[in-house]
Length: 296
Image (cartoon, rainbow, N blue to C red; front, side):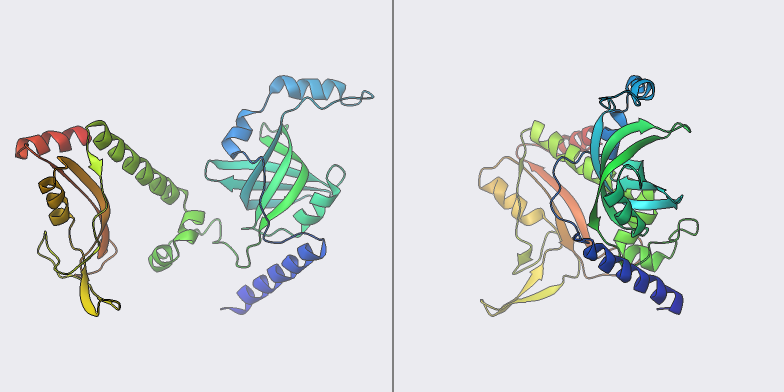
């Protein structure tokens, strides 16, 4: 750890302690009524902005702008003295928040102690700034989680392959395309399951620890079962147990599961990987060809 990094972390710890001194929990707690940044952005109403501008100085005026509460990681922070601008990021994207010392004095104190990478909960009215940016004008700011380590630098980014693969959370924070890939993978798996369910297949889970690994020719990982006093092998394929289900009368089965092959390792090859296998009684290779083509 460099001396500069150590100083930055020491300052973050001091800010955390100062947040606690305000009577707030630096790592937050349960928050009710949260919506996504996209949902908050969709609430913006130009008519409400116009009504606010026309009547905000009238006595008994009620703010017509819609209210929202969001939570996000602080990706940018600009301190303009009595007004702090924050860029909050959640799974749906970025949203700007403004914290005014006049309108939100308690939240302003917390914003002053906020570092890049912290997670904040911000509630307030949704409006649009003069520059056209949809923004939450805060009337409440609460801690979500304190980050004690600085995030990857915004402009340099995170390019070190070792760090990216060993600390995936940093990769997800720094590289938005990586998060999109993760979300796309989840969506693909959901569609695969829906496809097979619609065709009458039954999804099953078969044993990962096997006395004799089979279904493929590969080197297995070994493990030891204490209660039984014998060695087991992590499965190298899904095949044999799925076929046993066919024998038992389950005519259409599929599994999406982890396999383990103790062979090689590279940036593009992991000995622990996910496999899809599906079997259908009374079908043949053309049946499975059609199934795979239709799935893709």
